[in-house]
Amino acid sequence: MDKLSTDLAGLYRAYIACLNQQDWPRLGQFVADDAIHNGRRIGLSGYRAMLERDFADIPDLLFGIQMLITDPPYIASRLGFDCRPKGVFLGLTIGGKRVSFTENVFYEYRGAKIREVWSVIDKAAIEAQL
Amino acid sequence: MDKLSTDLAGLYRAYIACLNQQDWPRLGQFVADDAIHNGRRIGLSGYRAMLERDFADIPDLLFGIQMLITDPPYIASRLGFDCRPKGVFLGLTIGGKRVSFTENVFYEYRGAKIREVWSVIDKAAIEAQL
Image 1 (tube, chains in turn yellow, orange):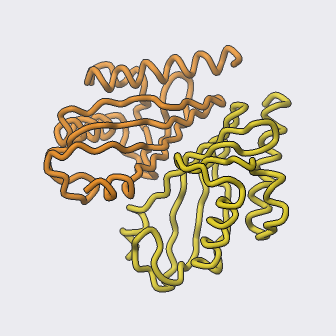
Image 2: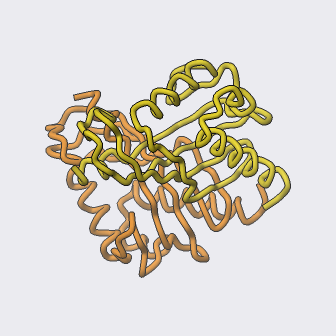
């Protein structure tokens, strides 16, 4: 890996640590003010609201990096989850059942911050566990 | 991009062209004999059978590369689809309706061939169109 890739991978790991610590005041170090998520310009405030909602719905939520592919200014990450969503998640009634699933997600960075995200969660894998 | 990345991106684009041409005799140039897909060791023959089934279920299937992230021996690709699955697809009754969706997919290469695939299709996006 060249230096740029190493830097970006380090930044990304720090971003994931920030999420797992629910350290929302620090989120702005990692996410751009005008961030776009799956085609919607939600901005930093919308991004934070989305994550806070995720942790409210899934109290034991933890982001685990299973694979990290770095090609500046892009990163692709395969995230793994093993958690118990309290009620409804992705339109599925989970009701506290423990489920394992993955998310394949792409990020475009602008400088040190995430500018755009393209995320796909493996909903079919969750359905197969219900 | 360094030379290795350029080579891998070129190989991957040739693989996608092979799929779109349904040129199955040539698939073995791109996919390893012992290929693994989403955790299952289906091998080249199983890989080909999976793709033939996809084209049987979706006669107008076409793979479009929307984003390509190269970090040898890994590639991450965001694929876009705009097609009319004939009957049931991913457990959803489509019945010939036109749907647009994406797939975020990771590949590990061994030499010039795909050794392992981790794919997530955006099923929620399809559901939202039904």
